[in-house]
View (tube, rainbow, N blue to C red):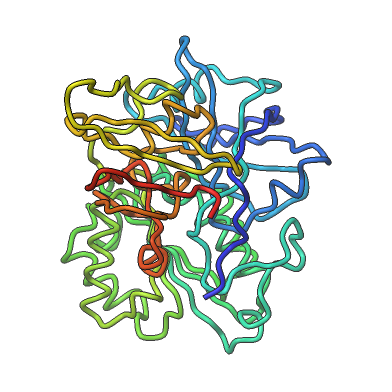
Length: 385
């Protein structure tokens, strides 16, 4: 499997060039990328960017998937307002064109296994073996804002291969909650024999009861048996809340689908994060002058640093590193996005959650520093690896 080129995670100030209302609770935000930064903002469909803004005196970071195929000088993300979400509410209600926001260069590995290689070129976007494959069939199952990266992937696949077909199962509460409804309709019109979408609405009655109600294990089994031709799917894309993604993974595994053919991404785990709570500096922790401390060392941008962390604090690598270097990369602090990835050079550790790293990365010693704690007296990681 070929993986996207990994850019060094860094923020740049980009101006909002357009804000488009998608639903009553969601907007599409476009950022203009200046010529001198375009190489840094090349991306593969399915990747995301982290946004950083100061809201009510507090620095907030959130990651959002890019929702469009690569276009020179332009980054588009969709932001759905979440109940109690400070950043998403601000973006939907107060953000205006011309506002400058810190935008991290694209990251993430939720990309087709045979992914695009000609970035920033909407006309030549697919790797040759997908374009030459015999009618590859790809399927996505998404819920709510989980459609965001799927829009980028579906457009890329359909535009790049005249043989490829793409099928989407999209779950929402009601018709008014469907993000990118117009764009999905345009794809159906443009590729009537190669693109299919099945809307499942949990709070609206549809003619076919299979497309009404919440997707549970019974409904999913029926969808995979009667709607989606599971046996001919080359690759699966799952994006949404943890419960739905895990349900789909379990169901597909039960049907014998190879895990390497399943790509998944979570927008949240549904669990509270104990990651950095104090903006960009980590939660306050000080070394214990009388107790046992652990030395956490790290390399970032070629510079080394170390922090003493009391055993009693059960501090993550990320939190400790942020106390010494506020520019340590992170976005979600929940084990979902993978921005804080680093390689363990020395020491024993335990990683609580991992929804972002591939098995081969974990085997090679890479960890999500927001979820990893040392087990011995010292631990050394390399963010540059």
